[in-house]
Amino acid sequence: MAGRGTPPGHRYFAFVGSAFVATLLISNIAAQKLILLGPFVFAGGILLFPVTYVFGDVLTEVYGYARTRQIIWVGFGANALMAAFLGLVVALPPAPGWELQEAFASALGLVPRVVVASILGYWAGEFANSFVLAKLKVATDGKRLWMRTIGSTVVGQGVDTVLFTVTAFGGLLPASVLFTAIWSGYLFKVFYEVAATPLTYLLVNRLKAAEEVDVYDRETSFTPFSLAPTDG
Image (tube, rainbow, N blue to C red; front, side):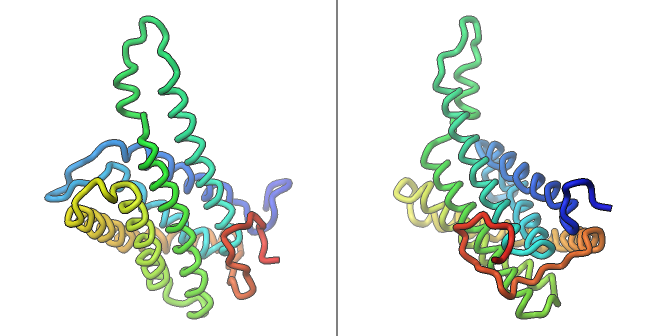
């Protein structure tokens, strides 16, 4: 039974949405460190950031584009707030005797250009992912979930990766290095999504059964510039 004040079919919406935003923020903090995976160098956040697309797929598949749009905007705002607040804390003078200012600033002093690139890439990529998934769900009448989640990720992660890399490092890195960073990061994220397909199926099926809801965006307005929770 739904809790008091909780609309039927949305008992777990806040939980999934919160997990989405949490993985976004954690991955952006972890991105400050570069890690070596085999022959490739990645930002540390790449280990978790693709999970936001898994949650994005689950939200769109179960609750529809309009509800997912709300969470994407919440993530956008939370990301911007985190970046601004960390910048403020780093800029404020340290207390006498506190000798970790340099280490703190090195770890959490986000580069403004990278922050802008991250926010823009996330915003455009997540909306592209949700839009493609919602459209494919209607086109396939809800069949072949694996094709829809992977197809939407191919588009969304492509938009995200290109926009982030070019905005953050364009003009700073040679074109060959920029291109390598784009394709290596993109392939990793897509393969990550493919590997996570069984988890996506599990979450989607459990949520649909628990919520007794399965939204098709046949009449949805797909403008990203809205916080309306319904199609109207």
